[in-house]
Length: 62
Image (cartoon, rainbow, N blue to C red; front, top):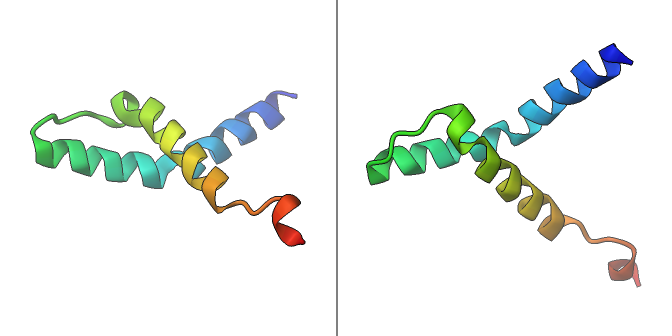
């Protein structure tokens, strides 16, 4: 059980890393230097929006 939680946490952090890293670059260029943990909540939201918008679902297969 503990291994599954650790593995899921690792996969979650790896999956949200690209969006979080790009947001860190954006905020750094704007003048708000934020770290990884400061931008992580917004990175999670952006990752969910991108994955939801790219998913066709069952309704789009007809």
